[in-house]
Length: 135
Image (tube, rainbow, N blue to C red; front, side):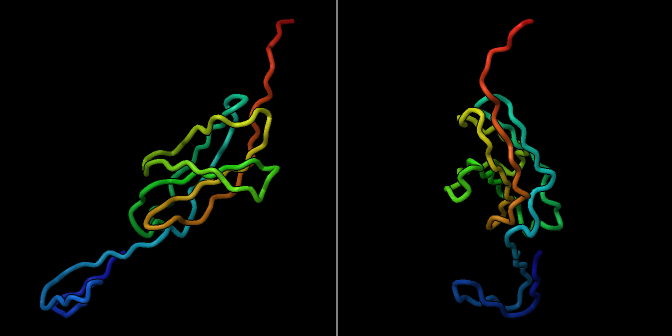
């Protein structure tokens, strides 16, 4: 979104005035929608993979800076969440060094000038350790 002021007088954040010229002011804020189609699945007994689709461009409200992936043990819902920040073109992340055979809650946010709303919280379990046997 932007606002155009032409041949007018406008004050900037520093209190300075600009007379008689054309300029653009870009307005941005947090996205008003979360990343879409978030999925999470276990890879091993200590890691999970999280994927998502981008926030629709009409809901970004600015330039996408990054994605923030949050997770925590689901059995401890009020514990502090862990966070992984990835670049604006990254659409997946592997969360590793997790506890074995444990359920985690996972959610994703997109960030422009601020973080937008959370995606739906997903629940994913790491694998149970064990040896495969041949019968």
